[in-house]
Length: 223
Image 1: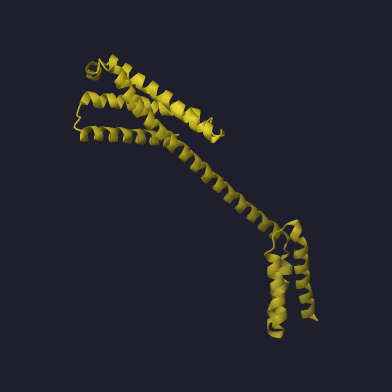
Image 2: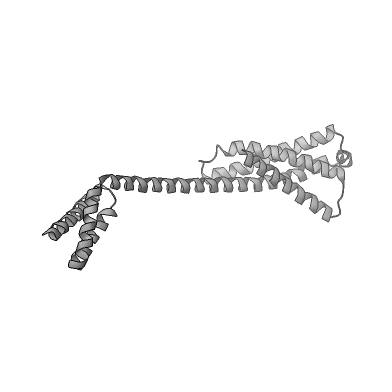
């Protein structure tokens, strides 16, 4: 939640900064106007938070319904934010209201379209970020499951391996290296096959055969 609000404040602050710089670049420098725009983006940020509450319920809806819902909800939220902004300007007696007294409807529509566009951008970023987070969480979960599975297989294998048996196998291989290198390689292959085996029902027969091969090699060496 802390990261969410950090992104909210940073993002809307960036929108406000870009809007203000565009106005300055166009030669429009009016402190009452900057105050009005600041109030507008403040209500727009609150509206985006309300949209987030709705969007969290739409995660499993079909894509077309989500797109239609985002367009409609963003328009309603933009209308609400613009109306609250104009109402606040009236209460604080901002000069912008007096300057646009004959064209309040045009002022409303212009700000509505601006906020609507910004909310659509915000909505796209929101769905992209939330989807990417879910993908990352799913990949992390799969990696954890794979690691747990491998660890469980290793633990199961270690629990079935007899230390005395392994000690005898290694000694037999060491002795066979000088006497019968081919037989030593075969015995080592059987040992590696049994040690690298995954403990599933389908491979139990393979493990049994490998173990028998090691045992036979050990008997051969003793003879």
